[in-house]
Length: 234
Figure 1 (tube, helix red, strand yellow):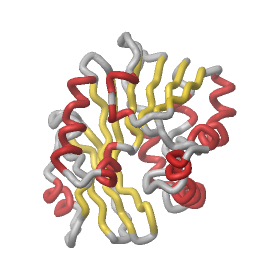
Figure 2 (cartoon, one colour):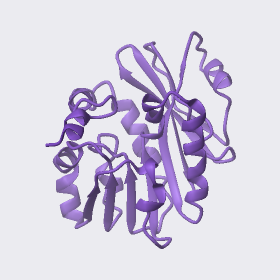
Figure 3 (cartoon, rainbow, N blue to C red):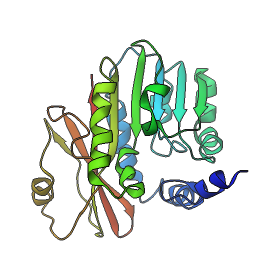
Figure 4 (cartoon, rainbow, N blue to C red):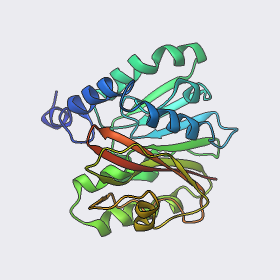
């Protein structure tokens, strides 16, 4: 295995540590979050046979029910463990539905056009990945520019995303909120009755402002709460 691949095993957004946490938490601490994500996925634009997953990791946040809607699935993720664990979690369900699964070891955001197929019969889903871009960048402007380019690149495609919007070192059970359009981050925090210092994941402008969305609280760790934004664009 190359040195680059070895470094990915301990990457902040994937690798051994991430997968161990996901395995430990998905049926307990993360369960309310995953149930809300599953409901969001059920609202995907219909009529597509081909699914492109950007940054799916091992599919910890995805449901078998959603994946079985598609005849072919392309996963774009540089995590070397992702294909093995994805098959462990979802392989049986995909074999029952006879879906064809393809993996591309790449960073989609480096050259989005390179990884998109032709034709409108594709649904593109960003799997909790947009909110991680800031971890590998010192420039908020650079991250926001890369994300702002995506809606134009995906013009003519149906696509969706669920991504970290804000996070804070708190432990609090909060309900999901359905919004008809974008809501300012400070207003969102205030409406939840929260205060203190929140980390901005630089994704506030990723979804077009007029798109309906749901805010899904995610207790990532016992004392780390994320507000995840999810929406479909069609």
